[in-house]
Each structure stands twice: as structure tokens, then as C-alpha cells.
Length: 274
Image (cartoon, rainbow, N blue to C red):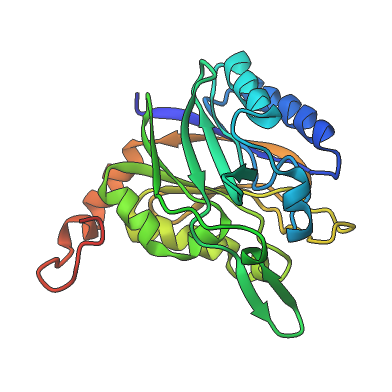
């Protein structure tokens, strides 16, 4: 199957977990009704984003959030990338994304590898490592359309993840993410386009909707970039659902027209996928 439809749910999360889960369910259904085969939720979709919230909202795998995600996938018969939520595991907290198949079975778990520790003087300071632990595994999962790579937010800044995924056969990288009003305008689109051009794959990032009253204000602008680096679909900052056709033939076309994929000089530098 050379085409399918990707749905991005740009959810406006609140402090009410049950309300967030219910709203996510409604918007996943909307994405399905608009023709989506694969649906993505944003980072920390079931809670506010912030180190002060992670412990309060944390759950183990198999808890309420996972049960609802399984139900959403099965009810709508879609592959569902469940954004991320704070996961409690063995006395540690992780920023964790789960992936569900159309039967509601969990087929992948990604724990954010690169923690968001930044300090832009006078603008923003954020230290996820104050409370979160980093994951230690890269994540690729199989669908009937092919293999997809998964990262969370800050993971997109590290090109090795996407490069390894592409070399191992992934046709797309998905990044639930919550860039802010400093890094978003600077780098949100640029990083997606860079990862797509580097590897001649599709790249898509799904953000929460912007809430200017929140302690952490997300940028929004969930988007899809094709293997030539073109932004083929984009939302603004408000809550909405974006559905876009993904044409896998575009990957081979890009790699044929500009054949950098086969022109790499691994005799001079290392193949990071090995």
C-alpha cells in the first residue's frame, strides 16, 4: 500500500486528566472520520507540561491512560501514537510515548531519550532532568504501511535518531513535541525540514495547542514535511485536527532525483546505524 492518511491531533490540554482523555478520544474519532489511518497525539497530552506536574499525573503502563489509548485505537481501527504521558516505573519517572495497533494492542513504547535541559538567559530555563529519567532505547515500529521511527520533542534536535531510523528502513519519523514560544518560532519547522532532507523521509511533529494562560506555553503549528523538505500541511496555534495523505512513492522519487542516500562515503566516516 503506497498511500495512507496521517492525522495529527493538536489537543488543548488542561489540568483535568479525565477531561484531557475524553477530549483526546473525541478528536481521535474526528481524525478517523476525516479518513486517518495513523493518528498522533501531542507530548504530555493527558496533563499540563512542566516538571511540577509530572509526579502528580504519572501512571504506570497499563493504567487509565493506556486503557483509554487502547480503546481509542480499537474503536477507531487506527494505529495510534499516544503522544506522551509521565510514566512511573521502578521508582523513576519517564516521558513516555506508547503506540497502539488497530486492535488496541500496544506495539511500541518510547521513553524520551534526550531530556529537555536548556537555559536561554532572559527567556527560558527548563530542566526535565530535575525529575525525569532518560530512556535508553531507540524506537521503530511496524505498520501495514511500513516501518516508522518515533522520538519525543527534544529528540528531534539529535539527527542520529532519524538517520539510524532511515538506514534501518523507516519511511517516517514522528515526534510528539511541545516546543515553546522561544524555541518554536526559531526551530520547530526548521528541525522537521532538516531531518526530512537529511534522510529523504517524511517527518511530522504534533504539538499541543497553545494556551497562553498555562505555565508553559506551547507553540503549536503541528505539521507534516515530505522527503524533499516541503511543508505539505500545517496547523496554526489553536486546537484542531490535521489530516494529510502520505505518499510513499515520494521517498523513492526524492532518492532517485537527488541520490545522496546511496552516495554517502562510509569509507571516510562512520555509518551511525551500524
